[in-house]
Amino acid sequence: MPNWKDPSEYNFLDLADEETGRQRFCWEFMRRNQQYKQDYETAIHTKGLIFDPPKNNNESQTQWERRVILAGAEPQTYRQVVYYAAKWGMKSPIQDPAIDAPPIFLFPYPKSVTRLDQVDAYFHTDESEYAPVTLKSEYLMVVLSKNRSLDKQLKGLKAIMNKEITLMDKPKNKKFTHWKTYLRLHDAKSQNISSKEITKYIKEYGAVEGNTDNKYPHLDRISDHNKSANDLLQNPLSILK
Image (cartoon, one colour):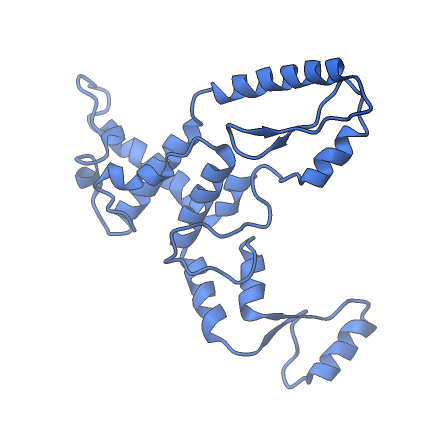
């Protein structure tokens, strides 16, 4: 984990791409979640399958399957690493929290659209419309039809490009800046660092000069941000929504 006192150690979170940035922040909060850490340890150290719905005590697998089927449900069994990976919204197996690179999440932000989806969408739209495939924030992949008006397709492409360029020119997501501060704050608090000590290193929490109403406004800010950090820590997948 990075040293909370040094802001440069969190620079790896300064990502311009929205999807990549959200996945990275989701993983950073998730890997700090104590329940996630416990689930990972359970998954890699526990033998046997997980039964869904659960088996009763002293019930054989055959008896369990029969009971579930008679109840109108479908018996499901999972390997530990598969079950816990699905619980945390990632592809199997569940990832070691010590790994820096984020896992592959089952529902990345925004919802991924395949090339096939984009091509299919194109041939079901008016010829003046256009279906780009976004590869990276600075690239577009396009599909043109040889049987349709090139002028109209290029006109549609120009409109799409202008829209994409406008989106790229927007300032960086402010949430990313807040989330980076929340992570530093959480990392400090997890080491039982006092709020007074935190103000020496995280500039967002410095006292405001000339404020006579609240001598230590940074304490309120730290309290509010700590609550926000804990909310994201408990529900990191909310970052992908």
